[in-house]
Image (cartoon, rainbow, N blue to C red; front, side, top):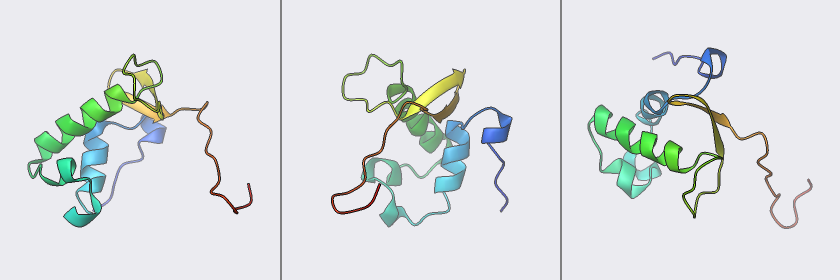
Length: 90
């Protein structure tokens, strides 16, 4: 199966993520996502995760890894900083 190029189309969608994660074994997925066997349920779940995690979200525990570029389209947050693990070079 050939996946689309989401970044060239203006962002990643929940449908794209559901399609991509559908190729992984259920043991590698978070339990809440692995229980959702129907593609539409996975897309809805991932859409809610993306919405809560967007940079402008008021949701408190959000780490804000995604930035909404337009309705239902997300890119990695350009202001996101990743720390190397202890002992790793930056």
